Length: 98
Picture 1 (spheres, rainbow, N blue to C red):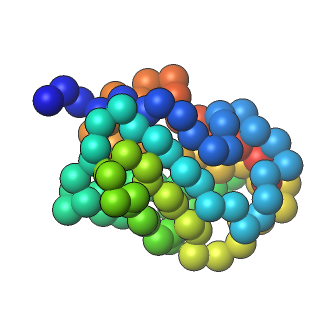
Picture 2: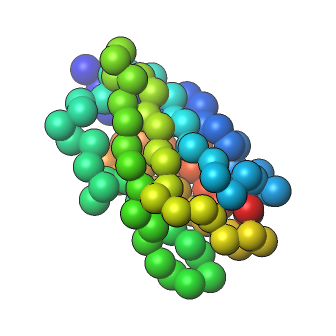
């Protein structure tokens, strides 16, 4: 088994006018191990405030889709970056603006 790669994300990188109550979905090429999907590995960052937001993580039963639900509404007109450490996501994840 190789390193999982990101197949798709919702919202997409560079999205603007993202709903403030968005649930972010990431689809991977291989099943992820639920035991390793902890908040230290998945971080949603408010770029301007340099702040990591708390979020709930949910992995689909097949292990391919990870849903990240921020614990609070995103701030309007702010930029956020999602980081997933330990996967081959180069160029796949980036900033969005609420």
